[in-house]
Each structure stands twice: as structure tokens, then as C-alpha cells.
Image 1 (cartoon, helix red, strand yellow):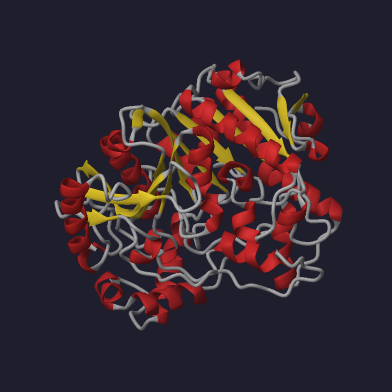
Image 2 (tube, rainbow, N blue to C red):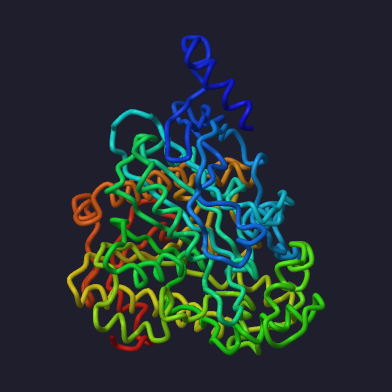
Length: 505
């Protein structure tokens, strides 16, 4: 890759008129060369850019280190890099699954069989120009319960969103499972979250070269990626770097984190499985094991007893460390100890349909009422709390609930607006994932939501208000319904419609 990059840059210098598709920018990494996006006219893509040193050898289980390099690099394709190391979710033969079920599930859960490596701390950039246009920047953190996740999937390909709204779209690989959240006693914790921060710092220093504005960075995520966005806001209150936050289907109040004791227990359970013992300083031994051995061990550690029959708790995930993850977020939020930057927060109407798949695979059967309560407890009320806490400190918040149910994204006959399906409206990739075209109403809603997210990124404080979307207020028609009855025109209702069972903040 480096040799090719050197030749490409030389060719650009000498024969730019002929090789105009060989696009090179100067960064703190050195020269990086991209190419035109294959399916979005006018968009340039840069894939697999290192933002940190490879966390291998003595850097395994360590905080990410800033990338240092000056060799030309061709950011040409996902295959030249790799996903981080994890065990994908198993594809199950779910009853009455649609023909698109398998492709949607594997694209969403990291099950496409991509290459994996510990050398995975890279990011991908899509932009419409390398000029000084100061485009807004949207940086995405994938979900996956901090156990799985990747950027090499059509689900998160940013070329269509960038083309539609002239924004810079970035997706970030970060460490998951035992590599990102090892729980080793006496060591730095929450490495995957620290990866995300270093990626944001790299963009602050370099996104201008790609036509972006470092003062207009918005981070957004889905599920555990959304929790990551929320955790970021509490971790970096004084220097958030970012100007806006968007949280899809998950907040810091949604899911139980590991306790310190549980994280240590899981670490030692894994170390015992690879022959390193179950007490004392096993780190040198764990450092000597292959990634394949650690991956298998992590997948074999038994999860804690379920706090919810609808969702099992991940084994390796964030743990309070008093540094970037904390014990009592309600207390912090009530005191306003979060980054005072605007937020969009929301979820889908029937999040439970996706969770129904894993529950069915485990043999868990829930009633419709139990599933509805799960959505209320895990997604709706935490979204309300998130919005209310910020409202109390006069931080602009917009709150949404997504309802649309389209033919080409349906998992099974009554899957409705399930967990993750709203991302198709932002990335615009439902046809790329499923092979089936969008309906006219689907295309219209996609354009509406892409416009809104881009408008927020360009001006987080008042952009959506200027677009006609009401800022969140309790007991007013400010909950934004998206795709209600598959209507592409947003409607606004009182959030109390859904918040009756939620505690008052």
C-alpha cells in the first residue's frame, strides 16, 4: 500500500490531467490518497486511514497511541485493512424470515466474514471536495453491544449521505470485546471508548484537509455506539471537541455496565481458559497469546445472569473507572456535568423486534406487553431522561421516535420499526444492503432525515428549529414522529403520549 501510494502521488504530481481520480491530501500521517466513490457521483472516499498505532505486541490491552508516520498511504479499500477482532452474532433460522433477513442481519451484526486483525484502528472518510469549504462532519460509532461491530459493511457506507447533503461522513473502527474492554485489574480500562476519542482528535487535526470544518464535528452512534456518544459527553465536559451529539437507540441510562468486580471476574475467567491462571498478574501471559486464542476465550466466558429476559448483558463492556466512565450518571446529569452541546436523541417504535431474534434463539418467549415494556424501560424513558436533563440546563435537544416499516427492510412480517432500521434513512443504503429498491415515500423520508441530520451538524444550536422542527419541551407537541404510518412528512406530538411510565427527572 505504501509503495502504491508513493507512485500514485508521483503520478498526480506529473499527470494530474490524466489521473484526476487519484486524490491525495496532506495529513499528520503524511500523504493520503483516496479515489472517487463507486456509486455516488462527486464523492471522494478514503478508506482504512490509521488514526492510532497498531495495538499489537506491547500495545495490546493499552490505551491507543497517536499514529506517527510520514509514508504515503493509499486509502483505497476496506480489504486493505481489517475489522477489529470479535466473534460475530450467529445467523439463526428465524421463523417467517423475509428473503432479506439474512443480508440485513449479517450486514448489521458484523457477520459478513471480513478479515479481522488487532491492527484495526482506522477510519473512513467520504467528502465531496478537498477544498476549503468547511463542511460539517458527522462521525459514526457502530453498535454491537461492545462485543461485535465493524465499518466494512454497506449498512454504514457514507457515500450516499455525503452526496445527498454535502457533508463529510466518517466511520470509525474501535476495539470491542476483550480487546477493547478487557477488565484487567490495575490496568487502564475502557480502551474502545478511548479509541473513539483519539479518532475525534485525529479528525480535529486533519479533517480540514478533506474539506471539513473541525469546529463542526458531530458524533453519532447507534445502540452501544449511541451509549458511547453519551459516555463521551460525560467524559470530556471541558474539551469535547465536538459541536453536536446524535444518539440512535441507546443512552448511558439504557444498559447496565459492568461493575469493577464483574469486569475482573470476566478477565480472570478468560485468562483461565487460555491457560494463564485465574489470579494475580496474568497480563504477561495474556499478552503472549494469539488474538485467535483470546477471541475464542472471550466468546466462551459465560455472561452474568440476565437482568432482562429480552437482552443478555455483554461480558466485556465499559466499566466505571472514575476517569471516563462513572458510577452514577443520574447524579452527574442532575448536576449538569456533561458537555453542554446540542443533541438529537431518539429510537424506533418497535426496537424489540430485533431483540426478539436473539431471545428466540435463547428460548426466551415474551408477551407483547413485556416487549412493549422493554422498549419503554430501555429506550423511551432513557431518551426522555436524556432530553430532560439537558433541558434543565437550557441545552438544545430534539427528540424523535421512528415508525416507518418498509418492504425492503422488513425482517419478518410484523417486524415494523425495529432496532437499527432507522440508520437506512441516514446512510441511505437500504438498497445496497438488500438489493431491493426504495419506495417513493421511503426515498422522501430518507431525504427529510438526511437533510435534518446534516442541518443539525451544520448548526447544532438553531439549525433544526430553522427547519421547522420543534426543540424538545415536556408537555408540548415537541416529540418528532418520523415515518408515522409511513408518511414521509414529520409530525409532532406531546411526548407524554409515551412517557407516562417514566420517572420524573
